Length: 202
Image 1 (cartoon, rainbow, N blue to C red):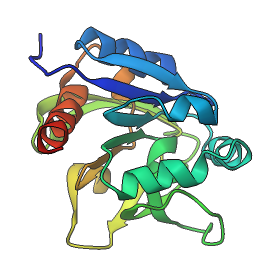
Image 2: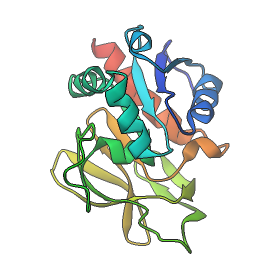
Image 3: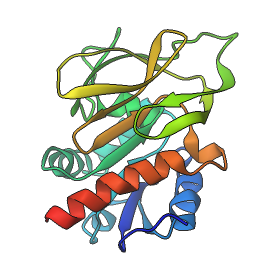
Image 4: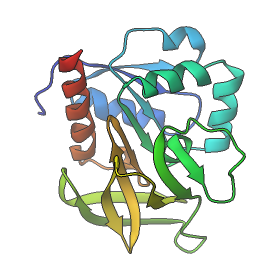
């Protein structure tokens, strides 16, 4: 079992694969709670997870529920955040072909949506993730990929077939794949190590 300090992690539960993240985090000893409305957001928390799903639906609901500004401000203030697939798209400052759409836009990455096309819309592989380990299971479901990082503050963590599929910038990490859909806990452990460092500095 991964040895951690007590953590309370918010999971955005507007749409998508949020339950799987909750189970993984709870398995590692963290407490989780779901953010479905503005009042949920103001609970005590040490981090946020933005799950995969439909990014357009999630951003629409963030605005409609008045969650957009407080979520974005918290991330900009240092709250650790982990975005998978759609979460990666929401955190990206640029999405190819969607320059006018307002996203959370806190991470210096440019993203290609549904980048692998129909034939490779869903696939599985194992590869290296810097700072995490080798043979990390990677399940891609109609996945985006990171076309490029746009500042020295943002570091690629994993590359598959020449495409960046994971990155970190400060307390933000993103993956194009879904680590919550496999039994391997190392990606979530890595995120929780970031949370632990942040909690200890507060």
